[in-house]
Length: 203
Image 1 (cartoon, helix red, strand yellow):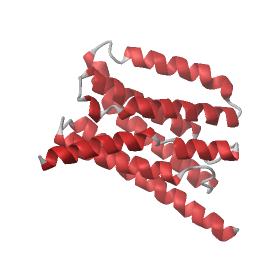
Image 2 (tube, one colour):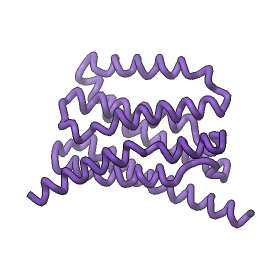
Image 3 (cartoon, rainbow, N blue to C red):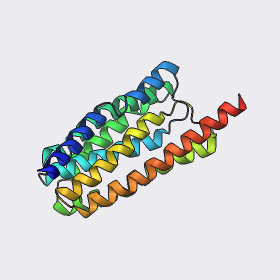
């Protein structure tokens, strides 16, 4: 009984956290009218990884509470991507990104091996996403409008999803993904806070 309650709490707290995951980041961009510090490459790769995970878990008919946050995050990521494209003066790329994401969504389920390969590759894609953000921060030495709160929420959701995966599907591919994402999200937060502290000292 205790385990069931804990699982329910982990599932629903994750969904609740993900419902506002990108809000602090979007609010920061809108308030500053600038996407400074945010890597466009990282955002596109992250969105790709989320789309693959949603497609994979729905394809294998996983329990809905274990992945229902993905559509919520994807909508937020799309909105954030549009903000970043707008404030970076790259809005003309929106159509090509849309075509790429829609085509990928349909191609993934043409064959079972494609969706399985895509899921395994999504960990590499999401790792590349975090690395792209880290690299951008290292190069600029400026965390700009990057929201530490958004990344902190991402750390929590990765931790809860490690637990829910172990308690339900025990899917190794999904488990490895969340463990890697947890470690990288922590690294990004540490980097953001480091450069924010450095900027304050400079001021």
